Length: 87
Image (tube, rainbow, N blue to C red; front, side, top):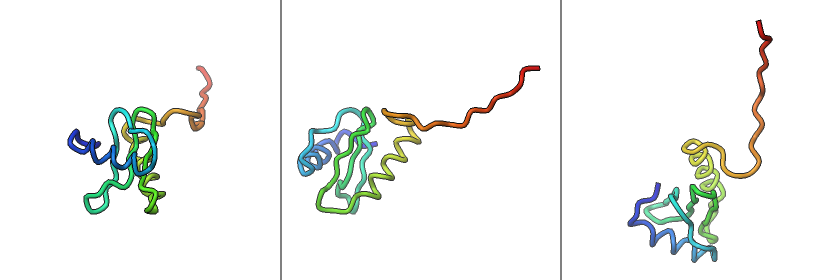
């Protein structure tokens, strides 16, 4: 999770991506100390540096978010249902 002192870095990344700033707790992907992608844990919206290939970093952010908070908003993946006969 991003720290409070990293908020300006996240705002700069959103501006670079021409997107509104992210709200709430944010996961942040850094390369050599530079923010390259970030995702809001509230709505799972992503901002990323459009001049870098961040596709795989965004996938990692999504996986990490799911580990932390479970599946995000939107259609849920179906899980197998196991039925047991009552005794």
